[in-house]
Length: 173
Length: 72
Image 1: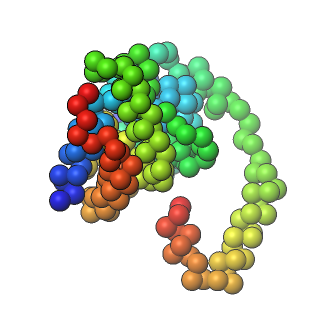
Image 2: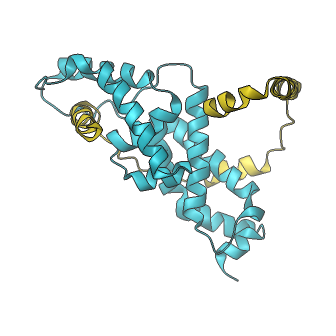
């Protein structure tokens, strides 16, 4: 029997095989949204827990990775909704591009503040599209949105970010 | 017009916030197994109370449904 069929029937061995195959990509996707490695690990496990519990609803002819990613994206979005503090954008503070560290730091703080002005729904699309350069179609599928809705959200997010970052526009770093 | 704005913002972000290059640091299967073996937590009474309150409010003020859906 095929792996996905076995998974849909609740076979834990099949689930383990899928987990091992997709845990890396799932983690990679979540960390790009939540920008925190520890949180991303916890959410990866939580997302697969939801996947495991929903095995009976999975269509073995369907796309497992896409289905699981959508579950993970919803969990990451829930995390952003519940997080009350200003969330960081830099996952690895050591990764500092550019030549002027003081200006870089100031700009990063400004960007972090600007992102904190976005609602979680706008923050997700802005982070994935503008920082991570994920194609619109991929983001739309992960969020279960049409591309038109995604473009509307991008328009709103860009407008807010542009307003917030206006003082930095045109500055040579 | 928005594409131009988007390009400007994207350009600015690229200068300060690099995309994540995240590799998983360890195998998460042991954690996954622990999570599977954990007994399911019962839903706290406060969640039921909140759900009942929201349902009652929506029945009383159905015009609030689109507002609620927008914020979900």
